[in-house]
Amino acid sequence: MSLHRLRAMHASGEKIAMLTCYDASFARLLDDAGVDVLLVGDSLGMVLQGHASTVPVSLDEMAYHTQCVARANRFAWIIGDLPFGSYHASLDQAVRSAVRLMQSGAHMVKLEGGGWTAEIVRALVERGIPVCAHLGLTPQSVHALGGYRVQGRDEAAAETLRTHARELADAGATMLVLELMPSALASEVTKALPIPVIGIGAGAGCSGQVLVLHDMLGITQGKLPRFVRNFIGDAAAAGGGIPAAVRRYVAAVKDGSFPVESIHTY
Ligand code: KIV
Image (spheres, rainbow, N blue to C red):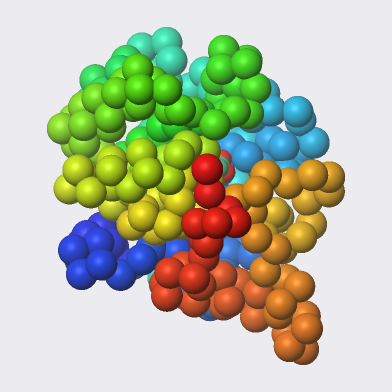
């Protein structure tokens, strides 16, 4: 996988299948199952470490997990998440943090938020670091947002989101994640931008989909958001295990049967 291939997939309308991944065993399994992009997400703070949010995750921890994933991966594109506090202080800090993740094996870094992040995106891209932006529900700002709520519901919030998306693409972001927002808004942003837009709880109109691995494998306990589909149930019923569940996810993203507008979207 390369940026060139991801752009070609986007241009031809082929959906991009992304999953979070935090270790070498799953990296090999997901890569073998045909997942296009492995996101070493800071969701690992909640999924692996048991924190209530992603806020406590450190750059050292992200570098460690990125190295674990990169060692086992063969073909997939790897995105390393810049954690909270690793790009907030200055451009210099952002560049140093991004370099750390790239040297740990990431092919691209991801950062959250719009407006103030555009100049960071520009600085990283000018230095040869591909960037994935992230708008909508940005979990690192959960305390400022007042919880894990659907974003962009009213017209003013939707307009801010459209503006931020355009600014980030203009600054050189080569991918955008949209999280937890009305499907119609995500579709509109996807059509308006020249870069692939990957949705999570953002409807079927995006250029691809991402889910947290432990959610789609039915490992996460408690009530899950409605955009999650448990792929292990179907796979197990057909006599398959985790590799089969991941292959089903990839197939469902590619053929557009996941997400279902009436079930998984807002
Ligand atoms: O950290 C993460 O897993 C993410 C996804 C939810 C997109 O940012």
